[in-house]
Amino acid sequence: MTTRFTDELMEQGLTYKVLTLLSQIDVNNEFEKLQRERGLGSEKHRKEVSDLIKECRQSLAESLFAWACQSPLPKDDTLLLIGHLERVTVEANGSLDAVNLCLLMALLYCFDTSFIDQSTEERDDMIHHLPLLTERQYVSTIHSRLQDSQPWKLPGLQATVRLAWALALRGISQLPDVTALAEFTEADEAIAELAIADNVFLFLSEAVVLAGNFYQEEFYIRRIHSLITDFLAFMPMKVKQLKNRADEDARMIHMSIQMGNEPPISLRRDLEHLMLLIGELYKKNPFHLELALEYWCPSEPLQTPTVMGSYLGVAHQRPPQRQVVLSKFVRQMGDLLPPTIYIPYLKMLQGLANGPQCAHYCFSLLKVNGSSHVENIQGAGGSPVSWEHFFHSLLLYHEHLRKDLPSADSVQYRHLPSRGITQKEQDGLIAFLQLTSTIITWSENARLALCEHPQWTPVVVILGLLQCSIPPVLKAELLKTLAAFGKSPEIAASLWQSLEYTQILQTVRVPSQRQAIGIEVELNEIESRCEEYPLTRAFCQLISTLVESSFPSNLGAGLRPPGFDPYLQFLRDSVFLRFRTRAYRRAAEKVMFRVNHFSPMSLLSFLSSKE
Image 1: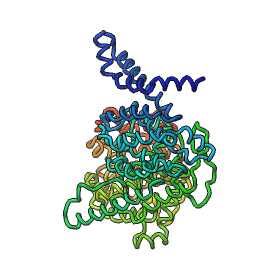
Image 2 (image 1 turned 90 degrees about the vertical axis):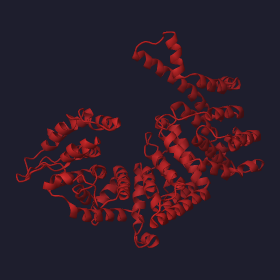
Image 3 (image 1 turned 90 degrees about the horizontal axis):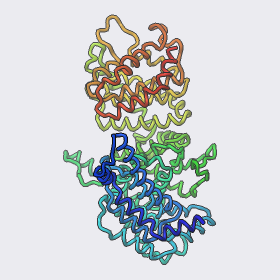
Image 4 (image 1 turned 180 degrees about the vertical axis):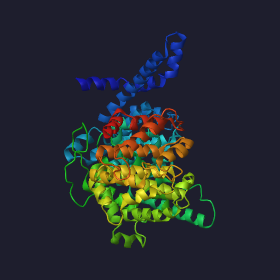
């Protein structure tokens, strides 16, 4: 009965009615009507009316999305939806609003061919209900509309739909008995090339994944995950072309720099955008899906079976060959890595390491990359994406910078830019530190293995770098990495003692010392002047982590009266009490302070340490 009722609604033009209402209902227009009739009251009433109108528009869009997730829209309805999306624009921040994002996802689910990976019985049932395979006119009409259409208001949105259509054609081409559609399936490469030319990966990052409500809907995350993995698995030659183009562009940039010329401005950045998209998509994991596991093909079996889903409750495993292709992509992209995509590759790995098992596999990859066998393949310098290379570089930076370490009397020069680290090097160090933090946050084994390595000694080197003259933003990432190491109680206990010894926060005053040193000086003289506080926020994060992990009762014994007092005094007097009176260049940073560091639980943990 329910199916018959909903089918009748669709046959009576529900899609047309929904899209018409979405075009007609506008907050500004509705407010003008209410204003003329004097139907608006106080500011509170205006907000309630505005929220109600937005909820109505969202519900209309979600009705189409819910239908498309279960059954693709018919040909005419799909064309109506495409026509609506042709006129869509983005918000001021460059992302799609909630309604248009929902409509885009509805269309993407109309082109979803993930059923190909299901069992034969389930796949056969889907084939009989999929217009892609049962209606040649459907394929012909949609193909012509997407291939020959005029530019949309958002070329990136047009590119996204084209990419989804190209992957749908490639997907159905793998099924038997689709010779009748050969003229369309053979055009999938050309459609994909049109999408790439319009910067589809950049648009997906900025307008879709970074949209405000993207991570609030599990099916959005799954569909974009499917879109990316389908591209990597179905079109390996296209991926290889992107890699070859990136290598050639890197050579051109290097030659231009060698000759003293500016790099060409017409270079494509498609592979870079693809890597950044992958990193951005998996950087958050609100439903604990750990979809990034599909990119790892471990040599050893998983220790625990994982159901890749939340409330769906369905174990979904891709065929082994697909996982092999994705894993090969991750590994091969790091081989002979050109400098232009070094940071994007690290950001991609950071996203793919987000989860307990993913972090373990990423740790193993960086460990293997530093082995002697890989060094022979990569050259004398070894792989630049390995623990060996990274921690050796950190050690060299520390040895070079500590020669310029200022004395306490010349502390006013600590904020000057370091002569030893260029901006590009700083960006690379920050990217690797963020990757390291992600891995050791999720994997305790990785945390302990790195910390106990006799040659790398990461905690010692990081503490040494914190005493050198380096920019606050780099110091902040070093502190965040220490915070990740401090999640293990045994490491936290030694970190407390190291903080006392290095005086990152000055807890011991020397009578002959004319000026204060440490983070309090950075806060008052550097960060306050710049109106940005990355170092202070990172220090709060470090102390909060250490307090929760392990707190020695005799902290500072032998140097000063033992206890937490100096830290509590700094947090209370210099950070908490002056929080509202400080100037902030970005309002979002003030919000981050209040939410992450000034929450009741954080304050309670600090006070508990005092007791």
